Image (tube, rainbow, N blue to C red; front, side, top):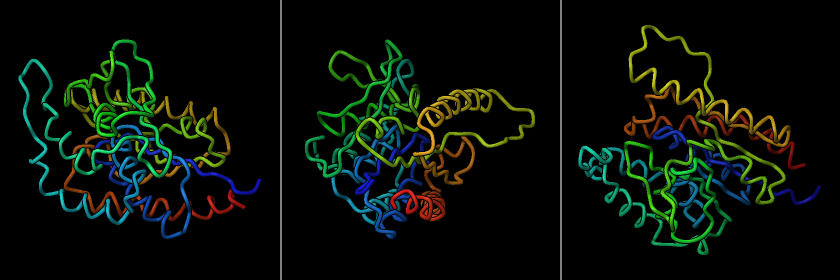
Length: 262
């Protein structure tokens, strides 16, 4: 098949999702063009920036600029709601994405969120990019649900942590999934409450990703940056490390991608 189209699925993972920037850097350096993008949670934010035409270098500069200014995104909410209001984060994201809509994207793009009422996956492909990204990054308890139409939406990583099937349905012949969820062998010693809850959440998401890969078969290439454990999801100070790990993991996958392109 000539002119094969590549779909890039950028997965959930909190701060670890900054590794997506390194993956984009490696693909750009190898002159590998991405034709479709889907994103969940942090993957939705990085994917949106790339889809509107920002280069990997520009996104990297933005991430490095903000790694010591994380407090500017913090706006505490009332105790009965969520930890953060999310208004500061939404303002920043809107400035980053230049108040653009899905119609303004250069690369076809989809954002994954979760319907809080039904538990169904919601694939957003129209409207304001900021609204869609905010819905997809709204981790329960951290940010409040985002109301889109009549639905209350939360973190896309809950139902589809690495949305490889979404780019397949968009028309991709070759699927590249950047996964930050699937667990490797982990040794726990006297796990506490937080570790147990987070690990359980990640186990469930791992099974979801494995099933997607099984369904799609050999046309899927999974890139897995070494970004640490679940707790690293909140280590935004490790921006440089995550980007390097993403770039290295993608570089290792380039030969396989080229092989499928031939």
